[in-house]
Image (cartoon, rainbow, N blue to C red; front, side, top):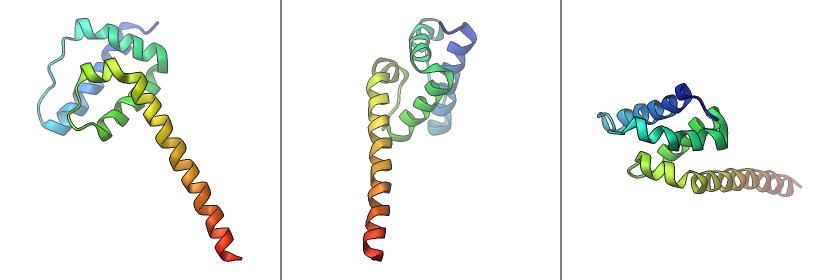
Amino acid sequence: MADRKDRFKLIREFVSLYQQRYGKVAIINRNTEQWNAEGIIDTFGMDGSIELLHYYFSYAQSPNWTTFARTYDKIYLAKQAMETDLRERAERREKAKEWLAK
């Protein structure tokens, strides 16, 4: 179970990323949204949650906390699929280089 400090840290990280992107502070009811943050932290841990949040901001057209909190499991699966694809492509590239070098 995530403690209060960690829940608010994840929300602050979201607000910080939002402010960097748009130049204004995201309006979030932190007292109610801390429970969504707790679920995310309990699932992925603090470091994994922050990493997932950064990934979400890297591709989302207009990121918002509600979407992140409700679809974090799907975001995680998409991130895993992307990482697997990149790893497999690198392996295939190396095999192709070896094959062409022969």
